[in-house]
Amino acid sequence: MSVATTRTDAGVEGLVAPEPPRPAGRHPAVTFALRAIGPVLLLTTWYAATASGVLTEDVLAGPQDVVTTFAELWADGQLPEALRVSITRAGLGLVLGASTGLVLGVVSGFTRLGEELVDSSMQALRAIPFLALTSLFVVWFGIEEASKILLIGVACTFPMYVNVASGVRNVDRKVVEAARSFGLGRMAVAREVVLPGALPSIFAGLRLSTTLSVIALIAAEEINVTAGLGYLMARATDYLRTDILALCVLLYAVIGLVADLTLRLAERVTMPWRRAVSIR
Image (cartoon, rainbow, N blue to C red; front, side):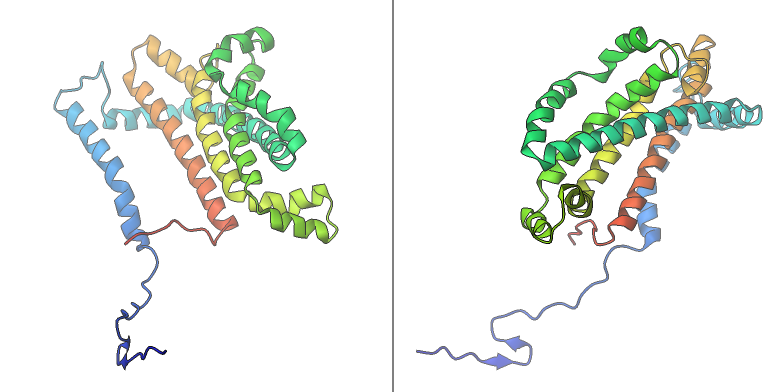
């Protein structure tokens, strides 16, 4: 018994002819404009509120005052020095925490013994808010740079660990077995197969750790600082300088945004085959 199929000019009867492929993504100018809508609206609302008197200067300085303050602090050298100190603290803490989380995540995700030895302790420590450790770190390491960097490092360790361990566990075991069948040892398999396969999770953990490094930086710079953005904020609080306070808050945001954009660019260069799913 056979079923006859009739063909039409458009193809097989009852089937829809496929649409031609559409160009992927939007034009960069359109993407930039869409991303800029939110910040522009916030800036416009802020300016309108301060210009109309809804927000007075003792509550929040206007954006024009913040720009003037930025120029003054940059010209006299206070702001460049504060940025250098704060970015160094956040960077060192991020490197320390991300490296620790990466190593422990690979150990926990790659072997069952490693998971049994590491995971339970890491999950218990992860439940402790890093802000609760501030006083202990002051007692243990003093009020110098070590306590600040270590506090940032602790905050950055756990998101990196969780993402790396999950990414390593999700690597295709058939690929790992094939690599071992070609004679690769454990270290070679981890370096050549596991880590490349877990790259998406590694970058996800690194982006989360970068965000937390800026959050932890704000907490760390409350520990008796004599330099950095936190020091500028402490002095501004004493003199009720809302323009300096607003400027420092914006600079914290800019540091986090630039770091995240840098990681997204590195992710795109490292894994060019990964693109966001677009539903039209």
